[in-house]
Image (cartoon, rainbow, N blue to C red; front, side, top):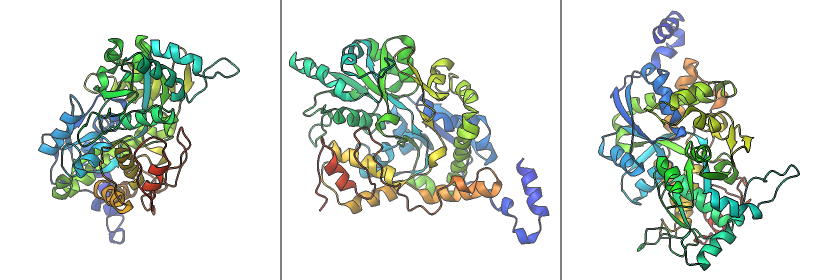
Length: 447
């Protein structure tokens, strides 16, 4: 296919300047190893590999699952891995020195949405009395954490901890669970310089559990609920041990989720390789959403293989094919539960980075107030739309994607939005005002 493109370009004459031939990158490193965690949203990596998109760019890639997010990040930092499927908060946290210190960047956002919050059957049985129903007797979504608050208060009165799981301190799952709880009047606790548990002054106690272990930990009673990506919410439904009560789409419509992370050193040492892998990932994302998700059934089959997510086909399909099941039998349409390409999902927006930084500050992971300029600078230090746009331009010239799918001309900030469960407006250019507007959390003066 590539040879055909070269020949077609050559026959077009000198005036064309050989546009396709010019896009063939001389990659500096062609053998690469990438890491991932067993979650549905690692799909762009699996598809880029299985569909030959990496090979089309002259890259010979190995993809390996990692034990947990810390092991994955450490592997990228020490060079054991060349890059990885990462929590969006990981490159930001590493770059500012929260936890491990290392300058990690991302030229590619892997997806939107894809997470949920699940509670045990017993907790759901108690919550139901506080959740309104529609005329058909179905529970009205989104379900507010206000329906959980009386139960959390009862646990406190009885001197019992209300334990919940999330996957990592700087994960979207941690911030989404905290956002949902706080919007319902439940304090999820704070991080401090002296106490990094995140449980200071907490009504509900959040702690780390690796994603694939969430259902078994819930079943054992160690936790009463959790926030995680798919397929581990649907796994609880299939096992009959828990009920997903809210999705992250309902907490924040079309929220950014994972990114592809690399060290800054890698991108500077291997610029063509970075462009090439970004091109392959953009093509994979486009394939995943093409023709109204026509390829999703094939994607589910690929993801169900043991070398990737390794969950049953039906469990992965329950969310990847445009639906989401809450209580067993309550299956609802959710066409945007997983988004990989549409809505500019792959573009690394500065405003996405800034939201994560506001949540780090809100809950005390960033221990001191920062000016607006700091948020802007960190976002630009980590998110690299220039690499993304160069890769996209090449793909457009090659005929793989359409120019209208790429947000050329953006300043990197999405328009302000109130598409949150509490209706509070977020403007990525006004992080301090946003922090002030949130009812529970640390405040910084916007003046």
